[in-house]
Image (cartoon, rainbow, N blue to C red; front, top):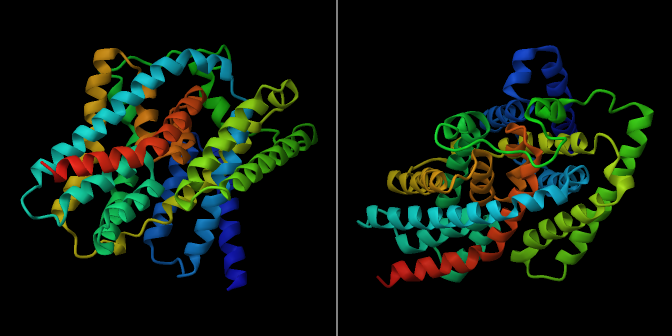
Length: 384
């Protein structure tokens, strides 16, 4: 089993290198994008039935370390001062996204309030929790509302399925579709010209050369220290708040360290962070298990579909009135529906590193208020 675990870990960490190599050789693969290819490989692997039962422990561990290591590296090269110009627009987009989720979930409650879904008001609370906050919020609300374990597991399974489809949509055609009604993103930083974005996200050339690799190791070391600080602080809070504390800590420290010129000048930190995101993409996609979708509850599946895609559609329509750009709409929606760890994946597919801070900030706020919104909406529906 030990040899098998080592082989599985090597697969997750080395496959991105092969993906990047083939993307460099074959232009059509480069157009598809390394992130999407990684995600598809993970989905194929997860649904093939080839993964052994113990793979879940390896996958959980990889999920635990890749995002906390990636976020500081991604932020080291960011221009936080330029992001301040986007803060107002981000907060407006966040408010619209939250309102859209609440309206979609409440609308679904009235549509399916015919006895076809057991304890529908509690399910509504779960959906608010996970689509404003995250999985930790969903688990918290399960305990607070005393939700039946079977209902919770079914809701969580359907959520993973539809969220995967939603994520693929965001990473492939969403930007082109939304640009029909929304304005394009306006870069705030001089080093973020649209024509250069593909190169910035995909250019790994020379990363192993001594003059780049040694400084990059120092950056990875800093990222590990930041991760350790987040992990240490998370020991002081309740289990349900661990993810919030970790993401908040590593984001704050990552931004502060990025303001140090010697760190900000290290080349290829963004690419190093994106490599961890590629590992995460394969890993998280391989956790999908379509075989678990037995005895499908069509009403519940439709309700979850409405909550995800209905809220996205509503957010786009409202954002069009306020002239919020397509990239900001996509990243804020993703930060709520899929939570903060998925922000870099979508930012990479959009070829826009400027929105990473906006997305992570949105996700953190979602973690913070998710439980409150969920219980408030659930109790409101219960008492109607």
